[in-house]
Length: 247
Image 1 (cartoon, rainbow, N blue to C red):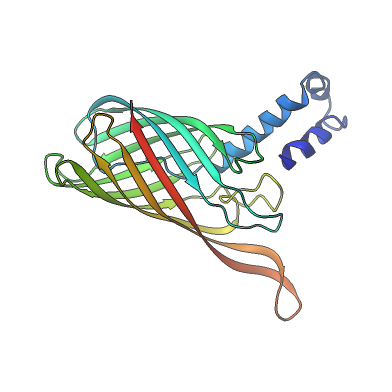
Image 2 (spheres, rainbow, N blue to C red; image 1 turned 90 degrees about the vertical axis):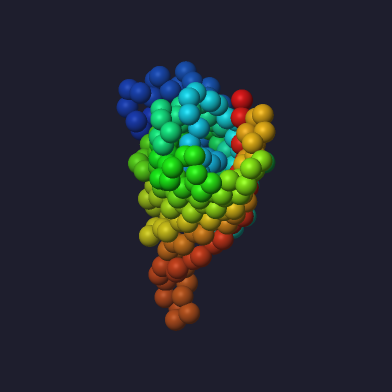
């Protein structure tokens, strides 16, 4: 990871005072892993799989999210993959809390994965015994708040329930064009995810979703048509796939 390697060189240059003596005893791999984890914690705001149905009592899921990344000036973006385990509890028929913990890589072919912790709360709006289910989810990330806010609608068709989700994602603010920059750290950013999917009333409550992530932001600085340099509004659309498997 380019950002991690540059950080190692800076930490060992002696410019950070007494802490340098401690860091000298750390292996380069450990430092790279720590810096990669920090960058990924900041960049993790894509929602975990959310069903519009509130599930009462304790339950757990294994989940995965895969997102195609847009090209960047530093090169073609890689596939972002989040794999997580989510222990959750429905404290009533209309409120659910979850604590998703997993590994995230912004480029599975080149980057080391980092730890992410993304707790959420979900509130059911419609009566749980009806055929229509509507829920609002609010999810945070370890280092910035909030991460995303979503609305999820489903229609109970007996053995399965199709669903539609719309989620507003909140970026972590601009971080430049360095290796630590992720899709969530751009200037004047607007992020929306729209997905369609379904869950099944099977033993492990499987669910799957496919959709598009709309990412609008200012790319600065680029050469404009008049020869000057300034921000250019960019609109990138990425495909994502999300799924879960109940424990």
